[in-house]
Image 1 (cartoon, rainbow, N blue to C red):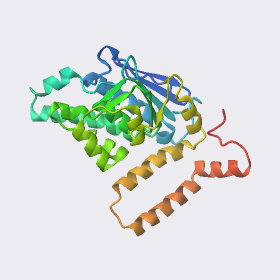
Image 2: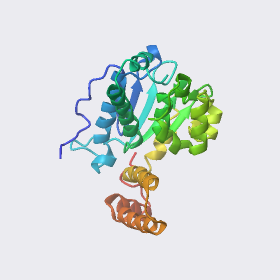
Image 3: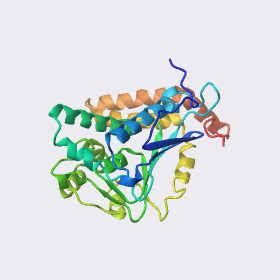
Image 4: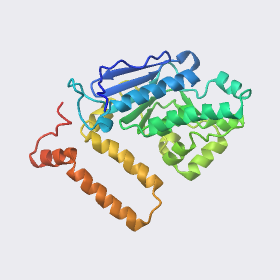
Length: 285
């Protein structure tokens, strides 16, 4: 196994940045001149940073620290610089799609799918800070994150239908987030919805007057939770989503999973710290 370390060089990027602060990574889209629209370069750069952070997460490594004693990652905060979070697919990329072959368009779609799936399945707890608009692929990013914070003025749309296309690649993630009926309605209307409606249907989780430091209380809360338990909770949900066996088989599987986690190093530490009335080793600050 490679000796992944937090001090390893980050992938080179020009349209987004990644800052590390202890166990928290902050990924910022910096293409603000075009409202952080997703072009091939930005999509590829985000994927590379998500993969880099995944490999250096507690959930992936199974350890709180790397070999140098630096904390592995537990939280990723994603935001967009400038006026808007993400205006969706870049207009030039959309225009060029008409001249591409079916194979080339499929490759573009596969790149987008890799972006959303990498975010959806990331072992860290992911927080989105969303201002302005989040359209098309921007709404897809929202649907893939664990906790999304918006401003009262934020507007979100599955806007693909306005262009005569479908929110197919982002569809599974939005569908899981809001359910069948709401996904169908949003995909057909393709119009922008406000923060209050987004909150009501479960597309976002929190509305604040200002995004400044709005994530800090969520980070504090997640730091009290076992980091492996966070990652395993995501895997638990994925197993429920994909379950094809019987109810009885599911019940037996959950019993096995509970026993596995209770017997794990983190589970034993959590139970011991509770009985000894002390903080667990993952919550020492």
